[in-house]
Each structure stands twice: as structure tokens, then as C-alpha cells.
Length: 591
Image 1 (cartoon, rainbow, N blue to C red):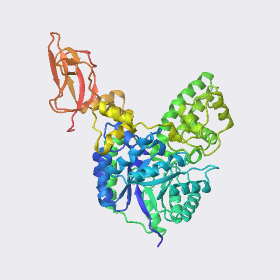
Image 2 (image 1 turned 30 degrees about the vertical axis):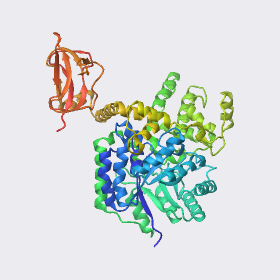
Image 3 (image 1 turned 30 degrees about the horizontal axis):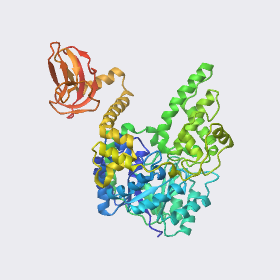
Image 4 (image 1 turned 135 degrees about the vertical axis):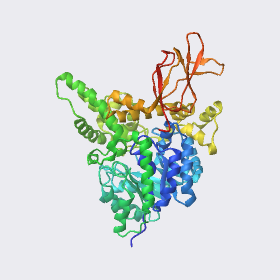
């Protein structure tokens, strides 16, 4: 029998590559014991890049979610891991070094064992400090190679970086094939080269299914010394996500590897629970296209996880370009025409900006440059006209060294605009900032949290955390969820049918007298005009819904009747209503 292969379940990435949001704390705590019961996973990805931001956007506390999800795995010895974007840590833009250092202490205290540290440019300067800080915080640092195909990304290129990771103290290396375009034979050679130089280092392979190479790649890396394989489970496996554990286990078992058995009863439970999370609310934010594989991804190299947002962006550019074409009397372009044009433009732009591996945030930058080029070309203005500071920051070296050579046209354009190329340590542009966040916490009388986790959350995601604390995030999320539900329902119903369907499930809140609408009273006993209800707001039976100031001056209370969820508001703050007029509709919880 061949060597033992372990499996990791990338539960966070399954959702991240499918849609916008993550399961709630209660859902994660519910499925964790079932994942354990499956018996085939030695590791589970519990949090990391974007996980905390999307929790905050949903009005949820990500620290509570991480602790609740990690705890069951910690108790049985299954290692937990997170995704760490190096210089960007858990967000899309650079993070001060003192905040990065705090992250590892917080995450270790919350129960996260391993941090997978990557830099989209494979710049060692963005990863080596994190290896040191992770060890200081009690975590295992897994240094990452972002895999792509270009003339500069050779086996020698990657093994030289791996040498530096090991020298810096990384006991593990991840081959992060984020777009799934890594050629199987190449990945096998790279795995063998690293293992021959560093036989004691653990190698974990992470490959998305998008263009269809992942199963062949898994077989190649395992036959050349890989130790751990990232996998997914239905109903989110395959598509733009990861191969399913059942297929991977079967293939490797047939190849003669020592692999764990799968408790299929538990698998079906986990599958059912995950589908339940989709049906309840997460499915409203999943792009159906992310369930499909596409060979087109091989040509452009874009990661599957960003396809949903890319298609939305492409639709907007399509409308603008078609408006220009229509004005010229030329044939308009279909979305398929636009997709081919975009992929061709990415293939044009990518080498000219120096072959940055197309992973967050550089995949977004290259895609955005290409989209803007399509528009400005249609306008007759040429290429590279509409580029923001983030795109230029990548090109100029502010995020790290570009692996290839910047095109002379862009070099000349930068000089013309007074922009300078740099090669300093990227972290040097982002000074320590933790003290200012401590002052903000104190000023607002906010609890620093267990192990300073709330301080960390503010420092890592300041805008989202402030909205979370104020309640604005929850209101916005519930409104977005209702809109998403209505939009999905509305695909098969006319507006009138949609309204009738919604009203059939809800109670009408009716004005008992005519007058002016007010929502609630303030602390002085006066009617407050500033607080309005939001779609999705919950009411208990008999709760007050609003007040009507009658013509004779009296404030009449309007009750929420049987209670439930607010699904429609028909009267604005301060508006006049007539007796018998419907103010709103509340959907009963028991239905």
C-alpha cells in the first residue's frame, strides 16, 4: 500500500466560492458534530479571508461563530485552519503589522490551529513575517504557493520560494491552485521537487474544480509526495468549488493509497444540513453559474470564486458598450460575445502587467483593467485609460514584487502621470495603527472582548464593524435578503402575482383611524421621526408596530397583531393615512 493521505474539508471556501455569505453561528455549531461523525477529515477550514467580513455584513459576530465552529473539532483533535492573505490578512487591502500580529494571538485563542498564509504575488516579504508572528501566537504557519501558468512560473521559480519558506520556519506548504488551471504534470513535478529538498515538510494541495483538471492534479500530487488534499461535500462540491470527498477518496483508494473510510450516513446528514442552509437563506446569494464547470477558465486563468461578481460587472459594461454600438448603427453584443472579449482582454493585459497570479486581490485588479479597456476601446480612447490607485499600486510594486516585467507602454504611462515604481518592503507603507483603534473602543465604551477579539475585529474590518455595532448592517442585510427572495420569486411571477403571493402569506396591518404615521416614541415621551422599521424586522404577538396621530392630536397605537416578519411597508414616515388603509404586511412565523 502507498503512503497515507489525509483529507481536509474546506467548509468556508465551499461557501465563499459559491456565494456572498457564510452560515450563521448556530448552523456551523449544528453541522460540526456531523462533519466529525463522517470520520474522514483530519482538518476542517473554519474561517479566514472574507469569512469575518461577510458575518459582519450579515449583522453577526464572527468571533462567536469562529469559537462555536472550532470548539467541537478542538475537542476531538481535528485540526482547524484559516485562510490568511499575508499583507492583507483577512481583507482586500493591506493591514498594519501590529494588527496582523494581534490576529494570530486572537485566532489561536479562538481555537484555530493552522493559518494558511498566501501572497497573491508570491512575494516572500509578505509571508515571512506572518510565519514568525503565527508561531509567536501559538499557531502552525502553512506557507502558500499561488499556482498559475506563465513563462516565469516555473518549477525552479516555485521551489526557490519554498526554500525561503522552510528557512523562515514554515513546517507546511500549500499548493494553492485557486483557479484550478495548474497543469497536473507540472504540479506533480513541483510536489516532487519540494519533497526531495524538504522531505519533512507537509504538503497540502488546494485545487478548484472550475476548468476540470483538479482530479488529475490530485492524483499527480499524491503520487509525488503530497500529504493532505482539500475537498468539499455536496451540494456545494464541483462547479467552481472543489472536488467531492467521495470521488477523491475512491480514486486514491483505487490507486493504492491509505485513505480513511467515509461514514456515508453522516455524509448524507451533512449534505442535508448544508442543503437546508441553502434553502433557508444562503441560496438566495448563490450564483447558479457557480455550480457549473467551464473549460473557458483555462484560457483566462481567473479564479472560479469571482465568476459571479465578474458576470454582474460584465453585464453593466455590456449595456454601456451596446449603447455606443447602437448609436453607431452597429450590431450589439450578446453576453457570450462579451465574455469571450473579456477573456481575450485578460489574456492581453495579464502579461503586460507582469503575470501576477490571479488570486485576491490581483485577479480583481486584472479583471477590472480588462473590463475598463473594453469600454474605453469602444469609446475610441484606447487601453489603460481608466485605472484607479489600487490597480496602479499592483503595477508599481506597492503590494509586492511583480513576478514578470511591466510592459514599456505602462512604464511610460506611469512616468507621464508622475507615478513612481517602488521596491521597498510593502509593509513599510502601512504603519502600526492599533493604538488609534484602542482609543475608539474606549471612546465608544465598547468591550475589547475575550482575548481582545473585538478590538481585533474593529482594527481588521473598521467600516463593517462600525456598521455591525450600530445595527445598520443587520437592517441592510435583512432588506437585501428580502429583495433577493422577491427577485427569485419574481422570476416566475408577474408583479401583480408576486404581490398577491406575498399578501396571501401575510397579515395586513390596518390604520384604525386616519392621521399621520410615526414609528416610535423617544426617551422624552415624544414621537420620534427618525426610526423606521426595515424589511425583515421581527415582531412578537401584540408588539407595537407604529403610532398614528389623529386629527384631534391623540396618538393611537397600532399593534403587530399576531406578530411575525415585516415583508412590506406601504406608508412612509410622516405620511397621511386613511382609516382602513393598509400600512404594512407582516408574515406570520407559524406559517
